[in-house]
Image 1 (cartoon, rainbow, N blue to C red):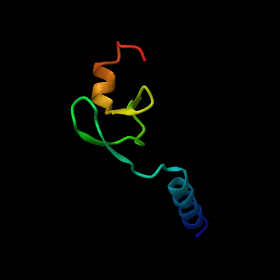
Image 2: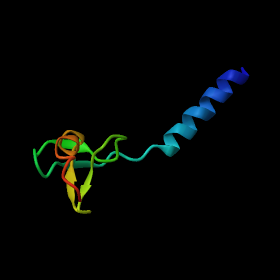
Image 3: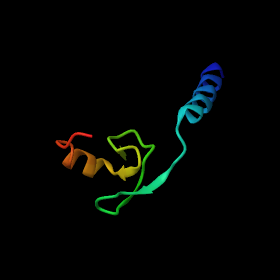
Image 4: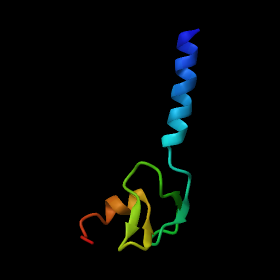
Amino acid sequence: MNSEKINNEKACNDSENEKPEKIEKCYFCLKEFDINKDDSSHYKFGKYPMCAYCSEFYGFYSD
């Protein structure tokens, strides 16, 4: 019974720490993606969304 309570509390805590889904369209390839996902997607120059693939592919360019 205690393990069930611990699992329920853990599930509640995990959902509180997750960022909400935020769908953006990649500035380069126009693919839709979740910018809040834990990967290398980010905003180029603070305003142009880049998916994880383009972030890694164009990663040799510095901001």
